[in-house]
Image (tube, rainbow, N blue to C red; front, side, top):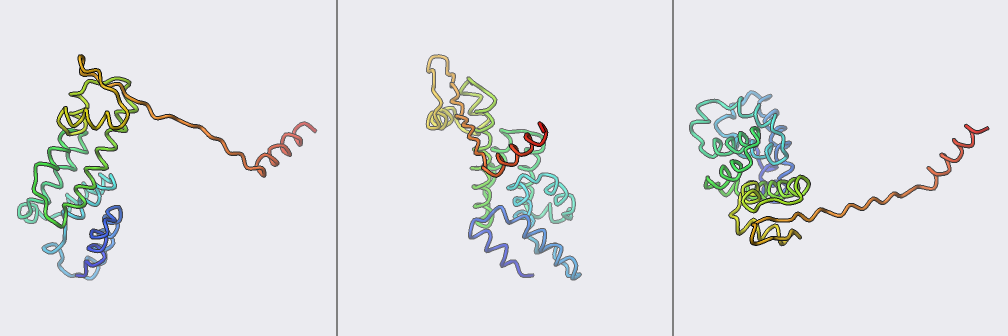
Length: 197
């Protein structure tokens, strides 16, 4: 079984490609009739789906993994724990699942990148949802200590009221630029002219 394409994606940190590569490879290998289950990198495959936030495919992959393999591979179970937390929207649980396992060199890169992206996503959601928020809530949603969460938020433009331990959210500036193509303007003019005459 040739997994060089997968190894190349992992080594080049093209993690967004991992799920598709694994899906194609598993279909190809399964169609040849070769027994592949014992050698298949299920943890990487599952993490690839979680990386692109394809929870349905991650669930179906988990259900297709033989029970004996689930029992023999703790890293696969740890990856699925992340998926379960994402599925149930247990935000703090995602961080606990990621940080509560000693990931192998093969998976540590995709897990670290997933966690970074997940943290950015959570910060973006907090920015959209709140105008002020208590430090402990930010720490909870960001999977950080209160000190680290405060530092992260302040670095991203939020301000801290020390006595109340409240952070004031800096909303992103929305610039709405409309670029009008002259050909579209010409067609609109012709259309209005046609309606008036």
